[in-house]
Amino acid sequence: MQHNVLILDFGSQYTQLIARRVRELNIFCEIFPYNNFPSDLSSYKAVILGGSPFSVRGEDAPHPDLSQIRGKLPMLAVCYGAQYLSHFSGGEVAASNTREYGRANLSYIKEDEVFFEGVSPNSQVWMSHSDSIKTLPTNGVKLASTHDVEFAAYKIEGETTYAIQYHPEVYHSTEGKQMLENFLVKIAQVPQNFTPNAFVEEIVAEMQEKIGNDKVVLGLSGGVDSTVAAVLLNKAIGKNLYCIFVNNGLLRKNEFQSVLDQYEGMGLNVKGVDASQRFYDALAGVTDPELKRKAIGNAFIEVFDDESHQIEDVTWLAQGTIYPDVIESVSVKGPSATIKSHHNVGGLPDYMKLKVVEPLRMLFKDEVRRVGATLGIDPELLGRHPFPGPGLSIRILGDITLEKVQILQDVDKVFIDGLKSWGLYDKVWQAGAILLPVNSVGVMGDERTYEKVVALRAVESTDGMTADWVHLPYDFLMKVSNDIINKVKGVNRVVYDISSKPPATIEWE
Image (spheres, rainbow, N blue to C red):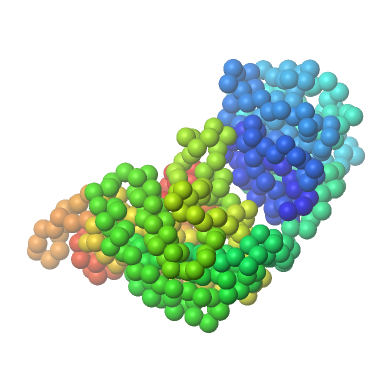
């Protein structure tokens, strides 16, 4: 991609939101750890320094090498970045008397500043820091203040360098997107040419050049990501794409056959492989969530290795990896600091001599859907909720058995069918049921029961990086709870998960 914006990650939970806001401006951007970004910056038009949970005054403060950036590329420093530029360039950062966190309003904005064009007086911004800039860096010029923060924004004369102590990327900064647009478009003059059509044209050409006449094997899951990846690759290489849909025994009820039927007529070469028992054997007795993911990932690769050997001269393995998978698997502190592993991110074992191609690697989920619409994929398929790669295994807390899988499949079907029949499915970003490792006492008729508890989960989100629980109607929850208990043998209690991400994750494991 050309005309990139480079975002340096210092460990802030908001870094991904910066990228989302930039992408919404039809500008392509990439996130890199502050200590491991490309040495060749010739394709970048601007740089954004993100926030951080660290203090610039601490011994463990991240220290980026800005020698190839500052004064050479337009730069916007956000929160930690603003304090870093001040503290180590002739200014001073000190601890605030009170932690500056939450909503604030700009009480002063310097006149005739392009950065604040179209921004209202008293515009609301979101603060999140315990330090504050007391003195501006050398050649610093104050651009904005709030009631409590004198140097809420500044620029450095002689450079195209701007800095702000608030977070423009979050919802609570009501005109933050306008400020980002002012910086990127009006100041840095970054072209707004990152559109679904442009992406399709560029990625198809890139795949054709990269793959040539080689054969590619792709694992289809029935989900949005793998489907869009398949249609993109089919557009690029046609008959040289071989799609395999593996039944790992952990899919939704009847999904294996329904997904195969769905792909009919799409022009894809798809083979269905039922490897359920192989996955059950790999998961036998495994209870640790991370070990479950690894066991499923390894079994998945083994199945693909077997299947790829049946395709003569296959060279590539295609995956539907998307950008949140990549971001969550590479942190500023390295793999040890990741939230969870993603079995479709990273390398393959040495024995599997396939190269990896990931056409959607740089897209967020909503961008994948827009690309799919551009490709003419059925809106119903594009509207499917995300489903985890490890399937129902990470929605069954504890060990995996066929009986537990069947119980959860039945519960999940009642829940998802209910959302659809009540017109709620498209209002939810992701929904599913979780089988808990506890039994509860109940009464059915005149008999005492001691059966399973299930939790229902429904969230709203844009890309899965953050999520809020959905306020489903009480009447719906009552109906679906009754249906589950009456129709699914082995369940006598239903609860609803009202946790948001962060601090919780969307999945329970």
